[in-house]
Length: 113
Length: 114
Image (cartoon, rainbow over all chains, first blue to last red; front, side, top):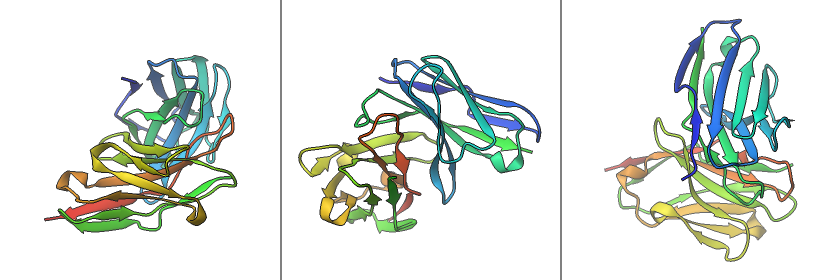
């Protein structure tokens, strides 16, 4: 089975802190994605990566950056966390062809105080 | 650009009754379409997907969906709902274009009454 793991289920940080959210997949997928999920807004794409060191902005990249140094790992970085970044963050991975499903991790619930 | 609309924010269905969750998409070509389910406190699980062929697709847990190009719809159905189906359901559309991600609807919350 495909497994996508995220480093933390719950995280509490303070405003202005630098926050790292880590995602690891074990199926050698080329594509990886970061979404945030908020009530009433569904899933919104922050960034995605289709290869090592490659990244593309999604719909809401402001305030975020990403890093993909190895194929299996995709990190989301909040350079200076703000309270409006309190949310559920979901990582996903997928093989190269777009008709394949995206496999999701369990999510990280981030609270910024 | 593609987009997805799930017109119903919240639906309540009696246990044993039939279910239909609506999904409308916008995309210029034939899309790839997916339904995911998210149980409370869980990640997203794929129920079914459509990318070509038979427009009626079967999924897990007794769900099915029908792709109707003329209506730009991909509605999810189940003939008899169980209490364990209470969850949030997301429709998603993907493009046949390299370097793109799935676009998700805002979700429909399903409650099941006894």
